[in-house]
Image (spheres, rainbow, N blue to C red):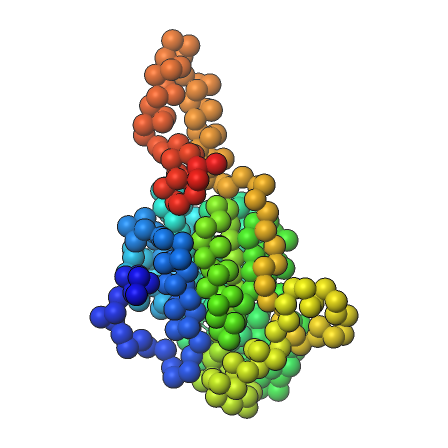
Length: 303
Ligand SMILES: Cc1ncc(C[n+]2csc(CCOP(=O)(O)OP(=O)(O)O)c2C)c(N)n1
């Protein structure tokens, strides 16, 4: 199987709890990488801290396991330094929506060419079940023993409003859609974001008396409505449901590092002494990849 080349099989068995959805998300990511034909030598995978962030350790690519909430800050630095690389962030809902929320907003706002997969298990898994911003209203957590008081929070809508140019949501039950959305996100040039609901039977399921992993997968199936179905539903009917599908896409916005490289080339050209303009422009092109080269190396068509 072609996707196995992306997996460090010698690291298996993985450390996730029995029934955890994170392995299913990782499986979807490697299948998506195979579908898009990601070159293992031209991709960097970046994570923060959490159960989900351990996923990068199983990938047979260059990887950076960083600090809690900062994966997108590191990813932004990598993309700016090496725009020709594909940069993929794998992180949890706590990591991306709480401590790292600001990085998420600004990565989306810049439309930087990073793909971000949010492993949303609705809880802080690694630290044993505190609520996260994506814990559903009323659900129990170690820090919400009588039910979560805060209202539901739609991270995809936040990211889209902030300026992300590819946004999709799926679940570990809807695995074919998950693979396809991650593949489309990887093929997208600007900032792409895929939220995947991933069951946590150990902390979320047990505390909420929701049963085992299979029951949680059934819960995803029952709660999920497609974008088309949601459009025909009232806000009351949508309460407690989760909208899955491609939620937003805009190919007209320039990717950030492309604009950055163009700016460097323009400034060098403008600042070079008259007689040296041609030479200066040549230097800029040889020391840094052009926007076209960067796009091609990342699997794009160089537009
Ligand atoms: C700066 C900082 N604050 C807090 C922590 C403790 N911590 C580690 S993982 C984590 C939450 C993990 O939850 P999430 O990001 O949702 O990922 P999951 O484990 O559920 O996959 C926290 C709070 C930390 N490591 N660093």
